[in-house]
Length: 288
Image (tube, rainbow, N blue to C red):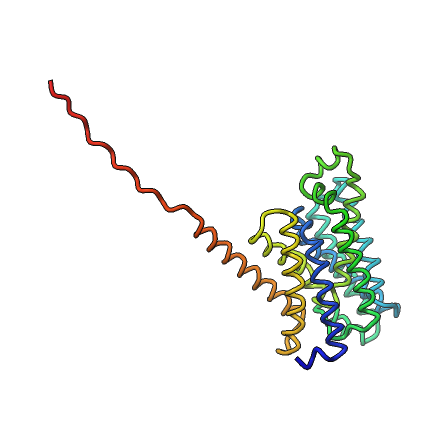
């Protein structure tokens, strides 16, 4: 493929594959904790950070990291105190983030609207060398944290009360999970976009769950599916002239559908054949 010889295509492919590894590595904990939609909420908060960057003339990636991390920590602290339920806090994150982003982008110059579209729907082909350095560094940090703290995060996401009784720093781990979610959403917005980033966290994990049972094997399969979907999404979109983010998500959904069908067929093949029902013995007639 001639496109692979182009530097911009190589940068796009590398950035996408980094996100394809980092997003499912984090997403498996979010799915386990039934927080699959938190990526959407933090994505809306990151929109406020993008708008702030466009308004002040700073790099939107850095402002989005700071704003989304603060928002994620705030929601986690509100949820922990119990004054607001988790879904209500997430709803406030949704609405406040997108309202702040639209307001700040409107206050910026006219070029902000066109730049905003790249962050909403992704534009990996515009990834610069400096962008790649940021994505690579933050992506490696997220992947390292998820793997290094795997036992503690696994215990937290399965049973928070048990983790607390076991002596684990539950609040610190919750904040760590919130911050890494914010970082992952922010670095992924250049590849799949803020509106679709949550899908890359959740769908590869859902597909892997159809094929595996253990946590480690599910994480491994999710990483493989995520990096494959991200890399193939960039390549297919470049050849077919389609949106990279949407193409990546559709390929991940196709992998989920294939895994679900394969799991269903395997279950049917392993199902034992029904045993014939023994006929009732004839009535015994006693003769005197």
